[in-house]
Length: 532
Image 1 (tube, helix red, strand yellow):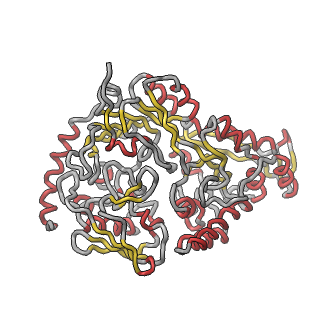
Image 2 (cartoon, one colour):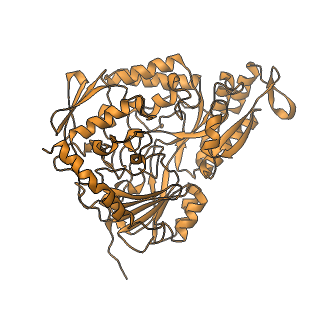
Image 3 (cartoon, helix red, strand yellow):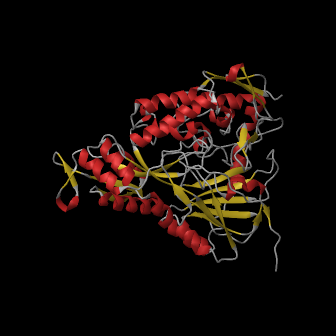
């Protein structure tokens, strides 16, 4: 066992380690395709922070950090920083983890149970700006028993709690010495993971080098760079030019590499949906009749066929239709005639240019999507076209999230979301009325008492039958009272140079590229032998 004083004495090594590692950084693309122990991939989204205390690595695959558990290729839990899956006792209220021996952070300081306790207690502290705190609502306390055992005690039997312990663990000896929300740890983190962050040029790239002392074995890919390229077309261009080894691409751009024998396309099934938020604080979208009509007007299958080239499926809620949690019978048909009847009965009558009017209010609203996101743009345009057919004028607008976020209370947004695993992960943050207006949680400010009760019932029960009934209720209420128009669940497509063995994909969440993609397990890749 290592005393805390020894741990703190090792902190002095940190500055030197980072300085040496930073010297190894390379510009994205500078060596793309040149070495089998180097990989440069293009992703679309950049994290706001790299601190687990603020939400980074909460679903695993962070590269810099590890959780107590991890998901394997098939999304089954396996030990990581813990030596085994937890021992569950006290009627599902107590989870006990025994920790792996001999693990150290990348600065050489040993990992102990105190780091686990520090991580979870800090996340639960209201002063910590973690938007996902409610995901740990069930947690009553976390305690260390010596250096190698951690005990979690719950307020109620939360069935998927073990899945929450894939959350990345932060080092107390670094993060506790600074402001949790603004300190340098948020952008220069230290972890136990297979890679060490060596540089972060915001808006440009994240660079990593292999951690030679990684407890799981030193990675064969020694340098790994994530290039931040928000524009889909630009990512495809850079991949074709050899500036990137791989990239996440929308279907039509991925198809352009189909005949390139040096590259391989990977398709990942997902829980990732595209949806239109219909804010209740808008005089048009706040009307349930309008929301129901738009739900019938959306031609989801056409979006799958024409926008996704078949790489996806129609969405009727956050749960994919092939999930065992999907409520059969909640599929909505494409029925423009039925949509028109709903609007007629609600008093929305055709006016000038065919756009409906009620009490002097024109059936019109803006629909925002992020600039450069071709998939969302295409979904927005298709949705606006479908809405026009029933007499609703939807004006599509592109903007940055800095422009969009202040408008979310009243303006519709072409949004995305979705998380594999337990249905609580998909639905609570999206639909719980108390979270309306809390950042990107419940963007539509959806407020349905029946849904609220069912979300709590599903979250607080350990009985599988009771939980299934609760989430069936949520989905059936969404069909009657839609706060969103769910459009598609999309497959994720990745194109990579075919230079490594061991690539696989998992079932992926909405957030992809950073923690997901064929590089979710880059630390296990093996370079192919050169031929020639």
